[in-house]
Image (tube, rainbow, N blue to C red; front, side, top):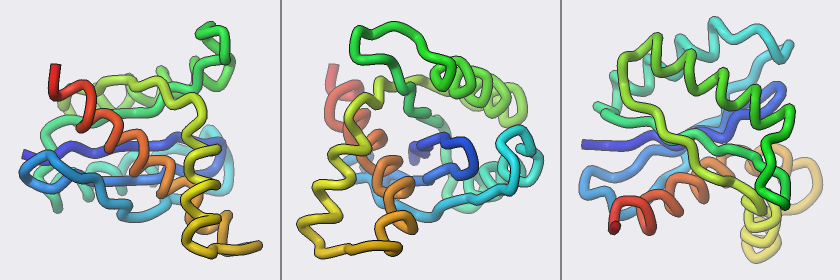
Length: 141
């Protein structure tokens, strides 16, 4: 079994996949699109990755406000998760992703990733953080 982690953004989706033992999350790619509401190709690519890696569950980051209230971006992420669930038939769980971008920035600082390169990696690293958090916490309950 493998689990997919997704960081949904206005024009990108960061993708991470767990190992088969559900111990570690590896960043795989960033799916890019030209417009926020143009999701057909994005969803098709997610389906391809699900098939390729034998994914049985999807975890999508939920960007709540710091007071835990639902934001407009949160609503878009919930709609995105619903579309994935309906299209793939897989269970989709939401995971609070507050501060994952801050954590991703810290990881890139430590790795010496600078300037334009940071934008290339931030969504994939955020997806990896979301999935690793899920693997470390939710599965062990």
